[in-house]
Image (cartoon, rainbow, N blue to C red; front, top):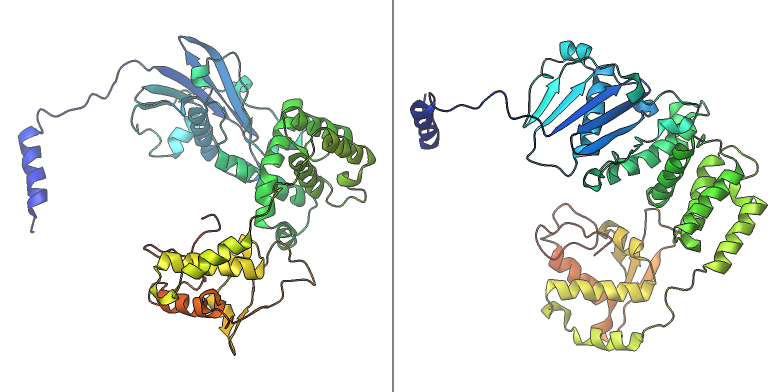
Length: 417
């Protein structure tokens, strides 16, 4: 067998050092001791620290998580406990006790230590640590946390990260739809009635709603209109304006009102409340002035001839010309595809085949026709487009989106440049 020089060097090192190289199995006393436990409905964890008061954390499993094996839930509870109390800690020795007598036997690698975390197989069965079954359906949404007088150095308590919160809002919508007992295929189609952008916009407010309900032990799916008003009032007291609170109202209405005849958004008291919010904290136009387009057109004339421009300037010129001529949102420009653009008789024809913000059943953006501007070739969209396609043909590879990055690897640009 042939060994290269690098492997040979490593072998020589081991031959010379194997007898004197070692690492102790037992390390120093732990800096922090954690305990975690889990049931099929929830999980709990606590921290014991010599300089801090005992603090607890915990939450309820979602419907999806409740289907997992108890071994998985025990390990997930230990992970969430570590995440709650130790997210900002490093280079310390942590000992964690978990209720894993069954887990230890069933998971061959569960006894292995990684870094400085000791996993003790002590059977805890601390029923006070695990969140109990609640009548509130909000238990199916979020890993909540509860805090008792704890030092600010470990306020990293919130077990759910931003990403997990985003997933929780998705779970909230799905759980609501699942409550109707419809077939999975039907539920999936109903779920897709919310566009991804809408889910993202509603996500933060649905999470706030879930936390609001968990804190008050309220069924988050069957709350009364008076509870919704309390929630909206809390948002107002936190400094949110009319636009943000109206989005929160829409988010709740779209989910809580599934199957209802009288939606929350049309409730007279809530409508009156929103008028009051607008009067006290109105949303004014974002832009009060417009800029002189003639200044931009004169500048674009200087970017000529197009075959002499750098790829960056050529890209910017085409983007600005299309923006001025089509008056479309960034979303539409981002969706433009070279397979849907044709040049016919000195005219640029652009088809947008994907859904945009203004699309709805029976109404979609018509084909965009942009004629060549022969009076001034420096402002001609057809000439600029043809040069851009010619310049990027060898760079774009399999990508067909119109706009690609001006630097390697020349992937399609994002909507937020």
